[in-house]
Image 1 (cartoon, rainbow, N blue to C red):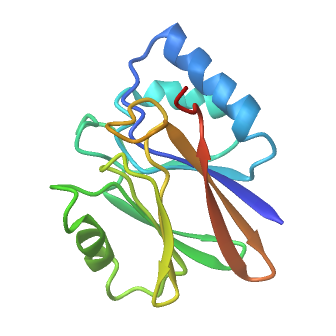
Image 2 (image 1 turned 180 degrees about the vertical axis):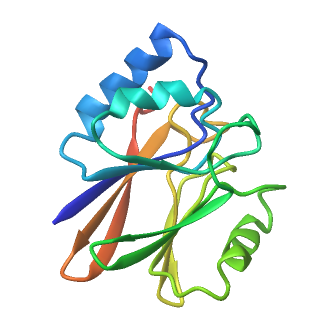
Length: 167
């Protein structure tokens, strides 16, 4: 089985505190993953060094600096599974349709996106739609969250990983 860590909308500054947060996240929730996907709004790309030596594949979100070398979208193939990675834009309503349209002519098994800070994990017409939520800004959700993808025998599954339960 191959495991892939997923996060989005971290909005973290380039500080020691932010780096420590991501190091802890890597140790607690992403230990043993083959790769990490970041669906945009990294804000300070240097903090992704916390995940080294694990490869990180990131895309640019609306809060990311334009000069950084993150593409707007990516198509990845991991263990034969085709994964689209994009941040998203605009209001929550219609977000899934907008990000799906960006990959409309490409066969995907999974579409990973962010922007809304709302966790999502479900299938539509065989496509796994996955938004890990935000690890730092719940925006009305009951908890901050990240995600895990698992690939085994040519199939992909996913889970939302809550980071903090409301007391």
